[in-house]
Image 1 (tube, helix red, strand yellow):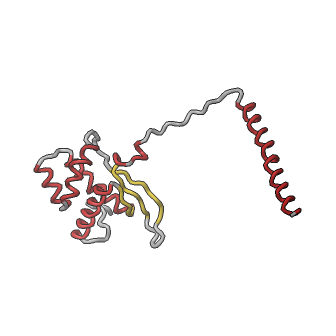
Image 2 (cartoon, helix red, strand yellow):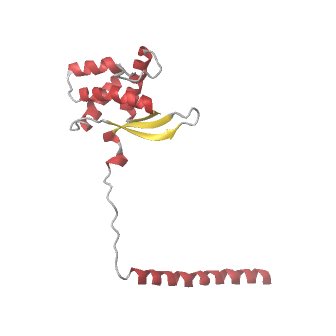
Image 3 (cartoon, helix red, strand yellow):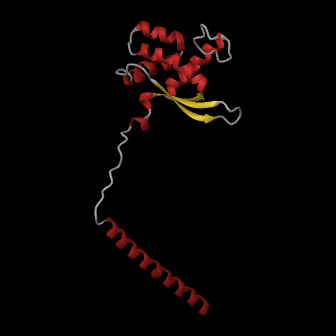
Length: 169
């Protein structure tokens, strides 16, 4: 049965798990995207999202609370400046997990975990390119193909003449 199992222990002691999640959270905040296993990414998501929510309120108390989890001044500066500005209007869901497949050595499920607002490819507008269609398109294609066919034999002729001259000498 699964009574009172709120989180994945990840096969580690409590102190090892806390240290690992803190290090992964620091790396995620500093680099905005990290590659890890799916199980660790899900555990990290539960660990880091409340910290990002705390960072929205830039007060001394919230800085101290977040510092008690992370213990890294540079990560705290980055979290309370750049990250909190980007996620200020977002009500939650600050991270995204993108599955990549399996790892070669042990067949573990591998994924990206990234901060949502820092991915430039996802932020771009994905508008479909509209193609112009006209009735003359089939005629234009035929005209474009005809000069290309004529140009190909013309290009081969000088090459053939050059070969004949080389044989004559």
